[in-house]
Length: 336
Image (cartoon, rainbow, N blue to C red; front, side, top):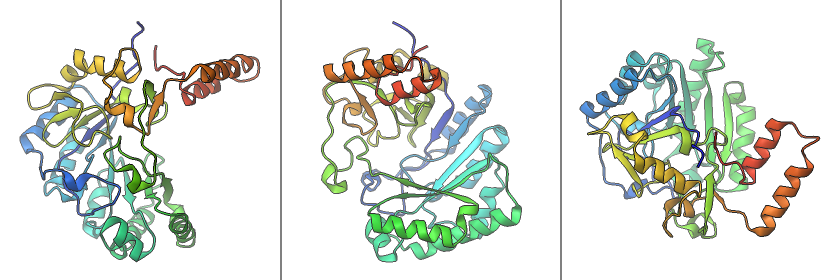
């Protein structure tokens, strides 16, 4: 059996489990409130320093990072210990203010993403449970600061993300994005609703129930697949498989008593990856079988059609494009 190609390029480090919003499509409100201890946080960052980590750090997972009272102290520690790492900070924007925005911009290199899931005030209140007037004010503060600082470094990116509740809201947001001039600094991304591997009720987001009999991979994160390259740590120190594992169904280790490399190279982690890629049989209710991002094993007709497409394309499609085609149709096995 060939080895699965894997390398840690992204650390997801959740420091609290709380959020000030109550988004309809998010199960975070069901979590027990918890804040990561400073001792554990320092241990993890020191571990990364010993690894000479230079990848991406996401100081959040299921939470709003600004609910952590120590968040800026922790971000400062990350920057001091890991000067070459890139911080990716995602917030719903409600708890931001001018001072916090300035503090975030001092942490370069940094990417900042603001999640706002409705344009109209009434719809935002319905979807997120918060008033978006304040969020728009903070977006304006960030926009002005980026312009004043003349941040044009291609490694500094700023996003406005919307998980679209309707085409109307999506259209309103796109129009506002253009007329406000925000496109000069921000990328606007419209994301589809997902079930979080069944942790959000399918009917609640207008989706049919997902349950694959057999899976052969994961497409979350594209070719930089999150299963092969992300390392996710929850506030209590438990290491989980992926960002969709809201309730710690697949626990792969515990940072209170282990190092990152110990967990990453443990047999239980490798066995779980083999389940994801269909190399060994997984349980009927394995989390990935319920996930929007899973690559289901193709049926007999799918295999024939896919094989025909790849075979016929040999003479006219470059190798790198063919690899992408294979990935999209579920034939790319992420192997060396």
